[in-house]
Amino acid sequence: MRHASNFSSFIIAAFVSLALVACEKKTDSPRAAEPPKTPAAAAQESMHAPAGARPGSCEDWCGEHQVPESQCTRCNPSLITAFKATGDWCEEHKLPESQCFACNPELKIERPPRTKGNEP
Ligand SMILES: [Zn+2]
Ligand SMILES: [Zn+2]
Image (cartoon, rainbow, N blue to C red; front, side, top):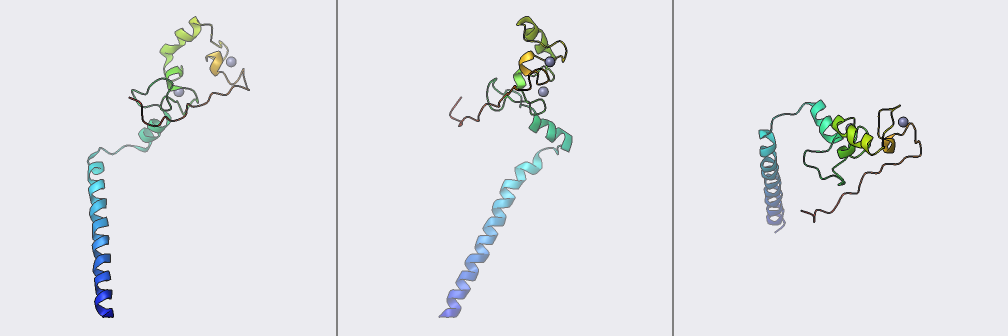
């Protein structure tokens, strides 16, 4: 009965591809409802921390300036007074001394590692 077995595998293949198409449609539909983003806005999003990122977490990172977003004086100038108050300020480069690569070429600011989602 070779015919019969070939036919049933054809049916299975057809069913599987149909199921895949159905799956794809399912996951696509909520995305389509979102407003389209401009490429610039998307880049901005990936470069900077999302709103509500915890200070010191992996998400709290300014990709544009390579410092923690919560300590990025270029993105958040209101932080400048706090750095000046602690004496951590480079007047020449308008940066916290602890973030001034021009004065401290050896400086390394590392992004905190991603945590495993077992935090609140
Ligand atoms: Zn920044
Ligand atoms: Zn400097």
